[in-house]
Structure formats: structure tokens, C-alpha cells
Length: 89
Image (cartoon, rainbow, N blue to C red; front, top):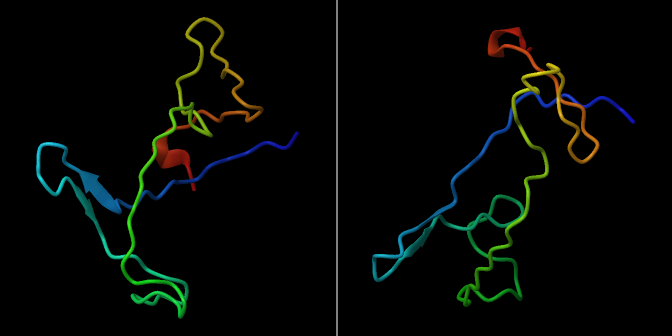
């Protein structure tokens, strides 16, 4: 097993779901391969979008260490590292 260190995660909001509005889903434009805003040849520009949600634990869990032992809980085989934000590269 190899020690894993996650420096930072960048999350980009690509859409907003507002169930109380008629047009409840607002999605930013799709960026196709090659940074194009038009789909590749053969892919229709208009399509129907189906959204499905799958509830499961996150791939990497960030949690404080155990208050009694001071050690990190093992979750899916990834060893956690506890450090202050200013100590990270």
C-alpha cells in the first residue's frame, strides 16, 4: 500500500437545481473535447438530459482523527494525513 497525500481539490459548479422554479435545472454550456462549444460531427446539438443520483460514501473521506487514539480511521485503504493548512505545500 502506498501513502496518499491529497494536496487540494478543485470543484467547479456546472449546474444548479432549483426545484421550486419551472425551469429548475440551470446548466452551464457543455465544453466538448478540444475546448469546443459545439458538439463533434455526428453528435446532435439538442438532446434530452436524464439525471440520476446515486447515494454512496465519498471516494475519499476527510474526517478528524479519533479523539481517543489520535489516529486516523482507515477508509477504503487510504491513510489520512493530519496537518494544518499552512503546513501543506
